[in-house]
Image 1 (cartoon, helix red, strand yellow):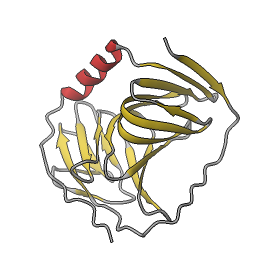
Image 2 (cartoon, one colour):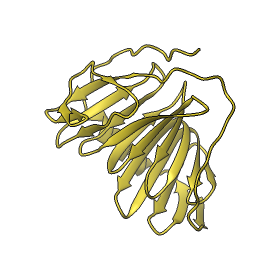
Image 3 (tube, helix red, strand yellow):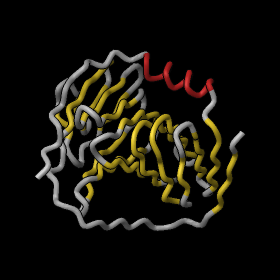
Length: 202
């Protein structure tokens, strides 16, 4: 069984890239349940989600944020992501996650997940679980992911990592029980299928 532990002091991340400017994508929201909010206001399926917007879910409620046909995030109940658009590269969807479970599919865009515990860049399909003040879990089902803070670590498809508030980064293989639990958690929602427009690249 794969097992890795990395200790590292906190770092500060600065990413600069020279790329063609791109128009920030506006996502489209799908909701399931009685308590999904967009910037504190009750949300409905079809609401646009732009840079700086926060989506929050209460009990028995979930949401899908769809940026394109290939890029989306399912927000489980009692979760609260904040969406940022970062430059100067103009290609990164930066999502600040404070608490909860999130299932992210990244295809067209670069996706970076920020939290007070860790910063993780992903390229494909990954699930995150954030327990404030304790740890952040990442389950990488497809593609690659890189932990850039608090320690540099690259994950391969089929690996998971727990990053503790103390800075410990522990990687291992995803087990069948992990997959089943994630499928059950996100498969219970009836989120309307929508087709957001693809990003408007300049």
